[in-house]
Image (cartoon, rainbow, N blue to C red; front, top):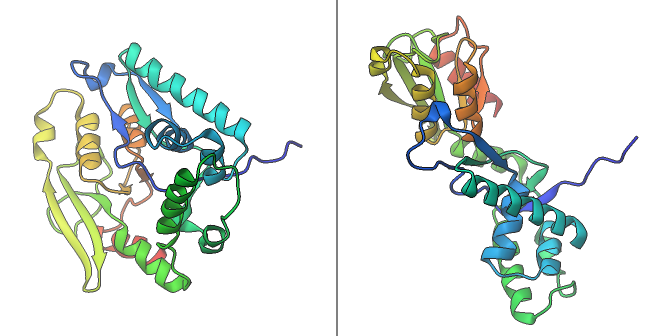
Length: 258
């Protein structure tokens, strides 16, 4: 049995995870997918200007592995540009550095393969700043994740007491839900214009969800393949199992279990 590949360490999620060429309709758009670790390799080497040895050490992988990831990432980006395709940064085999304790690693990083003292100090600074996000207390970390979470829930009416809508593409009512110290916050979005469209309603609704920066979509039925592609490219998890529940019910369950 082959040994499972080691997760690559990345400093953070990309601030933008979907790029679309101008003049091509969503229904006709082909999308190339760049992994999160491919994005990180490009960022460290081509943007930050680190030597590959330094980038590999930050990602906790070998230099040959970094070279393979980097070559593949460059190929995907170049192919999307040359062939007029969309580019989605999604998926991969990675872990965010803030999700693991790296303080000891940063404090001990006096050696390594950095080619210059300047690169070493820059890389160490980024590493330690990122690991500073880590909470030692698991309850505090859980609370931080909950406060950062943002979900979208389809509804059959404009009230949080409404039943979740099972028709995602034609859902006229959508709630964006977050949580803070005062409790759950419901932001209502009127999506009724989608039912005036002859086609492409699912894609339009998916774009609306993506543009609101949510992490998870909760709905009561199956999401169509084209809408699913848009949601996946936007890095949004989809829960289609909320049929018969209210918006308040599913929101409460989500944040209780996050």
